[in-house]
Length: 74
Image (cartoon, rainbow, N blue to C red; front, side, top):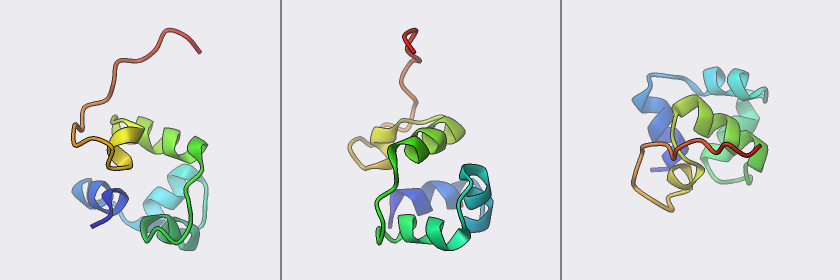
């Protein structure tokens, strides 16, 4: 299962809910979940912040769901 779908369902959200949060259409979000379209970095950041996790977790680069400490550098 795709990690975006997994974490969305774990939070009892629908695709349309996430699409609204990141300001894309439900169809566009669905393509991100199905990996038919690459998700832009800025949207990955929004999702990681929303779920309080890391981009690495969303991209299956780690199984650690806990977010990294925030950087003091912007």
